[in-house]
Figure (cartoon, one colour):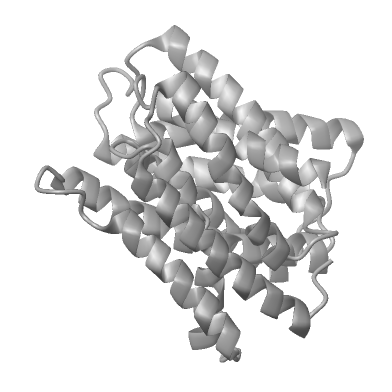
Length: 294
């Protein structure tokens, strides 16, 4: 359990570091540099440990799916949205991932939702409504569009981790190899996108020393430690339990944001968090009745 707490504390701190990084670079280029820096470390580790495994042609679809959803879309959409929103709000939005997974399973895979799961889902939706409800006449289009970017990131991360779990748990690949390959492909895609949509004069960087410091710190914490720890924990815990445990992130993000970025903790965030938590508890208690998750 300590590792799960450490994982979400790490993810929360990475939100803060990524928010700070946006002061010194543009989002697509930032994602590309973070991912490609992490790839060098992961591939060096795999080479030293001799843990590289030949990738079966039948598994490339899952690798491409994880690269696109879990790396490219999740990270680029998240950073674009994070430009105009607080780190705490971003963290709270990602707490809705378990409900989103249930909705996708209901419409795509025809999985049945019990009465209590619907109650939990509707409670969570009410919490999400509080987060996205316009905060008065001063709400700008930039903030409203940022919410949509983050919704896209949340959908992508839910789909993406399903591919990762299949590769690590069902296909038996090492988490370092899965993350290395997907980060390489996702990082290249982000770099190509940056070249076409961002200003290169000569690079989309505003302060090189600060940029490099934050990129190294974020890459090591998020891309190396947290991504691989999450994939490793999926061998023991289900996706349902891991996403349920994400309720820890807002606690850490609120404190880190207040201390390092001086972001206020608004009453709407507290109310949304409480509703999301109540919905998660109701939903997860019903999940325990239907399947063993540990």
